[in-house]
Image 1 (cartoon, rainbow, N blue to C red):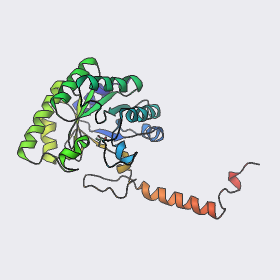
Image 2 (tube, rainbow, N blue to C red):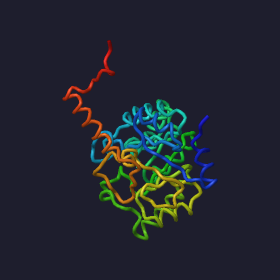
Image 3 (tube, rainbow, N blue to C red):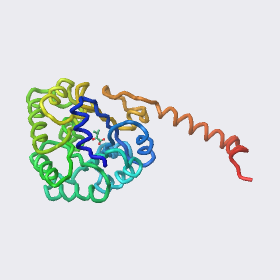
Image 4 (cartoon, rainbow, N blue to C red):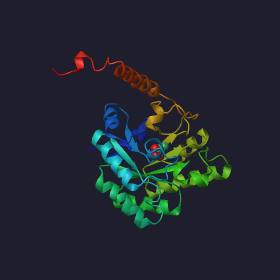
Length: 266
Ligand code: KIV
């Protein structure tokens, strides 16, 4: 039986980098299941890449559950991290427990991910872990707080914010988080946090020294030609492939060369 805590722990102790990719649907989950990628995150980044909003704020608990179910069906052998969306846990510990419980009861996700370093998030991490729900933390650029952070900008650049992030990483690890996503921070801070705590750090724009990396699938597959941040490497150019395929389909339909003889029933 898969166990995300043990899986991440084993790799962390062996100093093996951990690969995580986001996914939101059955078809891509099936494709990712055929690769060696370690884990799948059903991120609230679906607000941007699936729903077309400018942020993750509109994503609901129902959205996360719907997409997590589809991903779990497509990749039953992979460990799956389900994001807790905005306002599904920020109002109270009770609401956070209820929301995490709903995800765990209605999907086969292996854990939940919470953004931020507030006292409530730290206490909720402790309570959920105690109840048997594994928790992944998320520090640095936390997109649910994009409005107070002043946009998508690198975090932890001042001495004070660096110190705070290191301190809060330790508090989250002490509260029971079994891993932390570090998003958009200087490489030196990613390294310092990774060395300061004894749980895996998974970076996105956090440099080369974290315990692993996570990328949004549309970004790494090159599906969005307009999105080109410095941290991103596009491992494919599917936007171009899709454009060529759909254009060719259109031309063949309009020239009546598709369907051809081999595509028809007698
Ligand atoms: O929602 C998401 O996809 C995330 C990753 C960017 C880490 O939180």
